[in-house]
Amino acid sequence: MKNLVLRSILAAAVVLAAGTACSDDNGTGPTAPAAPTNLQVAQLSLTSVELTWTASTGATTYTVERSDANNPGVFAVVSDTVTGTRYADLGLTAGLPYSYRVSAKAGTLTSAPTSAVTVTTGVAATTLSGNITADRTLYKDTAYTLSGYVKVTNGATLTVQAGTKVVGDTNVLGSSLWITRGAKIEAVGTATEPIVFTSARAVGNRKPGDWGGIIIIGNGIINRTTSPIYTEGPDAAKEDYSGGTDNADDSGTLKYVRIEFAGFMRSGAISMLAVFLIIGLMPVMACFKMMPRSHGDLLYSLIGKHNPHVRIRSGNFF
Image (cartoon, rainbow, N blue to C red; front, side, top):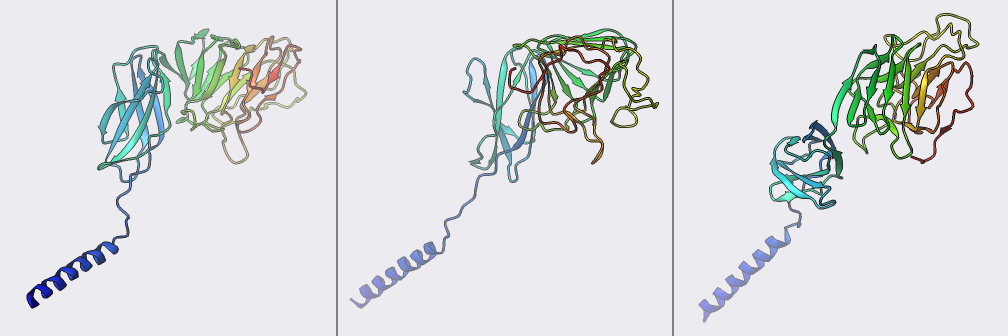
């Protein structure tokens, strides 16, 4: 009987010890890593894209998911074993929009996915740099990147087709388009196919000052008589706009054009403007949309002769 009582007491002590041990557990276990950030998708070819993102602390692998136009909003895993912060998706169909999102994994734990980023394949890509010295046309089936100070010179005309998108290279400070004296730009979009000049960054990551803007220098007469008079911007890029003699000088057309995230800051007080005009006569500058998110003045104009057809709007009309 004594042995039975002793065994009962020992069993109770074991249960108590187990209960005490459990009570010391604070209930916190491993947590899932945070979602990756700064997801960007860039076209590599007409049928391939590359994803890049910022690493998530503690992540050991990443899962890449894709959705296409045939199944919009439905994401399928294309790889769940990515160990770095870069992934190339090959063998896509040209001309289709694809959406991507990425999540981080640590063991069996997975983060929430990033916000989806969409890219359309089948668009050729071309980088513009240096001077454009002969007539050239930019087409809507090609994505153009302005890299550095791109200047139309030598009396050349730059024609931009409706629906064309041109981005400023955010890795080359001050990337911008210059129409120099004697040259022209003919950028004629439509309400349904506007011409867009914007930042090369992905939507959600763009900001004012990502690229330099558009500078148009004509031969209009201004009321400043000193010489030289330089445009704003870095010394290596600035142009003398003094000495204009012809208010009928034609610098071209801007119609249904949208310019955003421009106005590169050279220093705390000196900027390149989103759009800088020193022109004689621009026959049509209609439905020209400036986005109120640029460094410097949105539009700085030194026009020798105002044109009654100039209409600048900031509403959400295209």
